[in-house]
Image 1 (cartoon, rainbow, N blue to C red):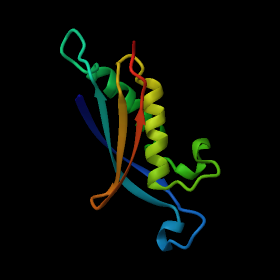
Image 2: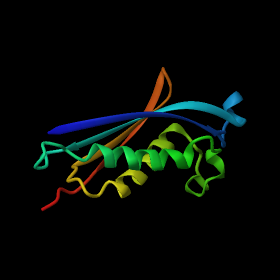
Image 3: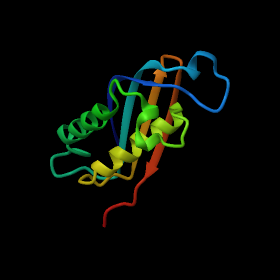
Image 4: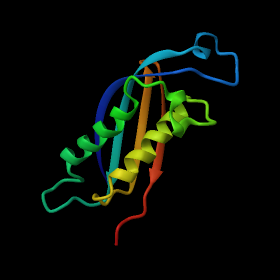
Length: 129
């Protein structure tokens, strides 16, 4: 199994709802670090798992949507607590929808909220025939 990982950082804002989490109940910013891990069984004819330029383009496109935004105001978080776990899933699903050219078997987003805490979401994908 081959794995490729790309890392980016960005700042986004949120506030948590549905519980008493002190300062997290009020709008606050986090310096997120997103690690995108792509896995697959085969390399292409050039010896690549996937086109890194394409991966970086799509990663930047997805991150641009959330950079400096209040997550609570975005439709994908309607009715959801914008927790680290939900945010990791939202990012993984958006990236999976865009990264269709490569025959990937899985895609994982590991999202760091600070240097001591992260959450991840892994999508298994059907192998290409």
